[in-house]
Image (tube, rainbow, N blue to C red; front, side, top):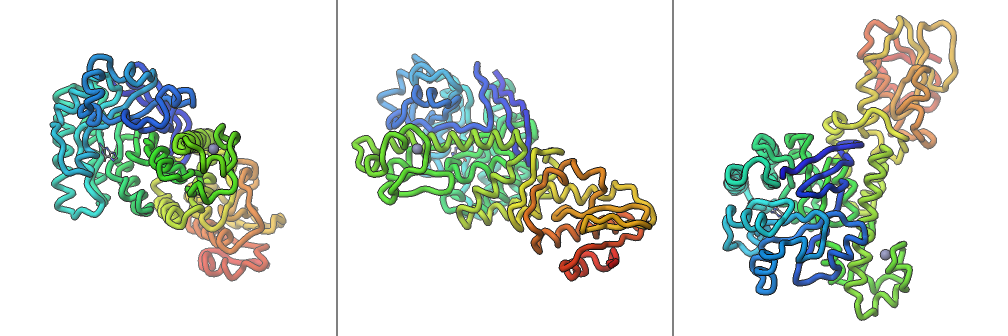
Length: 482
Ligand code: GUN
Ligand code: ZN
């Protein structure tokens, strides 16, 4: 049965949706915990009880397992793992990238994934290192694309096949890969080989890679960010339109004695208190958790709870239209995430094409908020206002006689007609006392208004101490009146 994806609410380029594969339908964004059958800290049954609808496991590990390789063929994955949710299998690709070689062909891994009853199958793509040079990246991408073509030919368009998008660090190769994967008819597109970027906090490059891939992957396809497991970066990735994450992080961090939070991870022996509402943290003191015999398992349970809660928070933020606020909050917890966030804002013109028209609110959270999609769109649409010959922008909100039109001013958006006072974004925007960045951005709005209304004479009053900024940003397009 083919993979289906339906999107519901959207915010920035993120969306909530429903992914269907096999007999199952799950809510997205979703987290797929990684299960290694040999080292299960938390069982699939326990995951299900925590609200997990889908998990991911590795077909290569099963095929090489003395304990499970026969059983899984007889019973199938769902029975063997005792999990009735959606199960995605990865091919041996990651092992290939880590160990250099696997004894599977593309056809073999896909047949195997089918035979063990997986709901989503991944071909043997090549996860090219972000440090590979261009010729290597191109060569490996060509092999990946050939294998995706082969997969479609062998198993047909209705097989539940994932089409990984590779292309290393080169945006144009990611764009090409995204387009070709879409043209081949894949409706489920993981973005691959980003683990090394995330492991070394290269979020700026991650943003460029994901934005490039997303620009050509069909909007109707479900996008999985392969190997993304730290909850501090989910909001950033969701804002770019990533629908699925898979996490081994909950277990890997636990084994390392690390306690995940949405604002970074901590060594458990450094914590004097447990800032979390999950069952583990409410039933243990920090010291008890640190010295518990089953510490690794308890940490894994906590790490999962935090990670799942963040996914729920993201879904709610998308429904409310407050994803930018969440991204802003999460990305201030690490300098490299902040750099990724700023990079994302530099792509705001592309994101604006996806962003929704109306949201519950707009919270101004500092300079970065000036570059948000809502500001860009508002200012771009100023050319739609119908104005008379003389227009006053009354920045102090005081109406004056003698003009064809009087507009008011709300930074960082800029001028607005009284009729828009209550509508998004002007009405629901919560802004603190004016600061330089927002006034500067608002004055750019005045400039755009003036440039798109050459027949009108635009005059500005009531800017008080901000006149110098006005002069710099819009002084040659509009005139100050006192
Ligand atoms: N897991 C993490 N990254 C990748 C990738 O690029 N491809 C596959 N198949 N699995 C992965
Ligand atoms: Zn907890």
